[in-house]
Length: 157
Image (cartoon, rainbow, N blue to C red; front, side, top):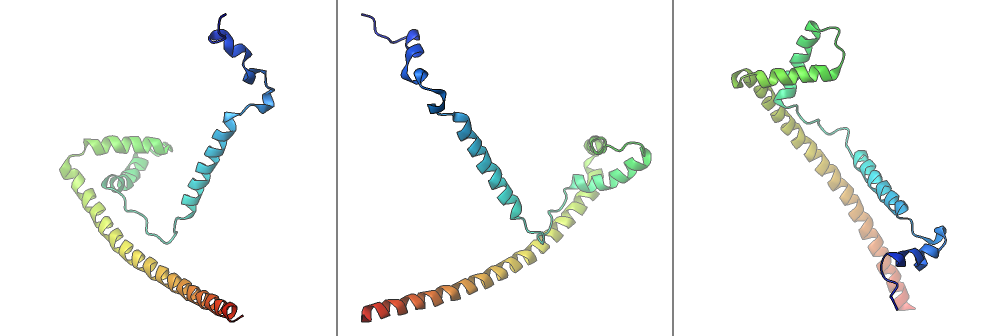
């Protein structure tokens, strides 16, 4: 006798005879994974501090600030941001290192200012974190004392 292995065996397997409701649906599991990752992204975005200093622009973006003004004067009818960006990128590539130097100097100055602001910001964050931890430590000590008193009361009984 021939065994039922091979191409014909899959047609009559027990799983194929089960009703559709009993089968596991893989799509639902994948959908829950997507929901978890999107909620994690929302949590990351919610944690941003509005008081934190913004990162400084690179030399290219310092150049673009000035280039936008020139470009709008020359092409007042062009409203697309992408057109300004493309033209600015082409112009930046065509500049020599000597022509880029003033923009790089401005970017370096802004970066040093940013680093100073970040040091001040970090100090503020550490001080507020220390204050919060001190408050929690006091609460922990008070609750630990209450637990010890309860244990002492139970031991007396």
